[in-house]
Image 1 (cartoon, one colour):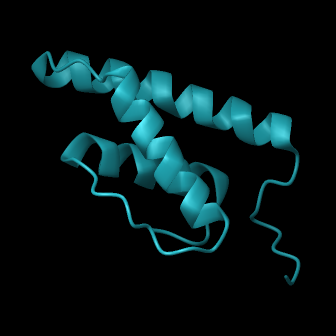
Image 2 (cartoon, rainbow, N blue to C red; image 1 turned 120 degrees about the vertical axis):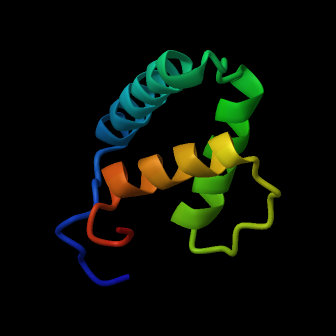
Length: 83
């Protein structure tokens, strides 16, 4: 795989970014409409992100909130790859 300067390489940095995005998104969703982002929503979005990061097609059916969380993960960890 060619070097990508936008890609986070340190696993600790990636995990910290994913945690931060999850908490930020959870709080935003709750403030906007009172919807609670569940642990299952987060797990599903993380599983989809894992498929994306490995270069596989995302085969998981995602809800609206799971898909939005996945997009946030991608934008945070690979900012030049998804806009």
